[in-house]
Structures are given as structure tokens and as C-alpha cells.
Amino acid sequence: MRTILLQAQCWRFAATTWLLLLLITMLSPALAQSRLERSGVTLYWGLVPAAVVADTHALAELHGGPPRGGGQVHHLVVALYDSASGRRIEDAVVRAQISEAGIVDEPAKYLVPMKVNDQASYGQVFGVAKDGPYRFRLWMRLPPRTEEIEFKFEAWSPHRSER
Image (cartoon, rainbow, N blue to C red; front, side):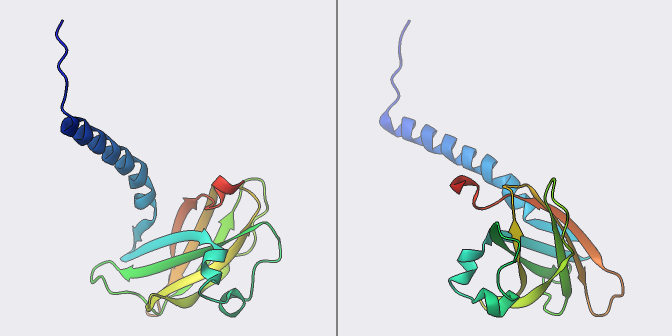
């Protein structure tokens, strides 16, 4: 039996290709989950530790301060686009409700209009007791419409590795 030795370049290429494929398969579900489309509206969402937002924005000014229930505090931020034109939606009324398994749901909260990199977005802080998954229901209404558009999605705690 003969052994064929691959050159170092071939090994590097193979290792790099394998790593890229691994990263793509790990990232693609997360990327797919952060974009939803319904009734002509495209929603992009993200959940970050509230401390990240507090570095650049005073939470008390934006959202009235952290929730009183304790636990870890996360900031939900959403951006809305008209699916047909790609225009950013700046005049919607948005509210969201978070659900955790085994915990009574709190009432929905309004997401406050805010600027992220000078772009219109909406955000709110939520206190959580568990690692997740968190189930969000989000309702948005555009001024000319009378009906609300509902989105549902799940997220995990950005703090999971710290617990």
C-alpha cells in the first residue's frame, strides 16, 4: 500500500474549506431566524444584553429603566421595511410580548422608536429568568392600515455562556 503525502498547501486549503462549511452551517439558521416577512413587511430583529445598549444610550431615557422583576435584562431591537420598495418603515406602532416556559406572561410592551446608526428602529428592554428559549409575539400597525401584523419568533439568551 502506498501512502501519498499531501502538500502543506492542500492541507491548509482542505482545513480552511472545512472550517468555512462548518461556520456556514452554524450561522445560517441564526441568520434565517432574524429575518421574517409577512403582509408586505420585512422584520429584522435582534436580542442583545441591555448592558450593550446602555454603553451608548441611557436605558432610563429610552425605556424607563430596567424591568423591576429582576433577572437578566435583554434589549429587543427591530427594524421594519416595506418588502416591495425596501424603504425603512419609521412610523409604525410596535409592541411585543415575551414568554418563558413555566413563567406567567407579562403584558405586551410598546417598542419605542429609536435611532440605531441614524436609522429608524424600535426597541424595548425585557427581564428574563431563564436561559431560553424566549418566545416573542410582536404586533405592528402601519398608519394607513387598521389591522395589526403579527410576527412570532424565538430567541436564546445572549448570556447563556456566562451562566
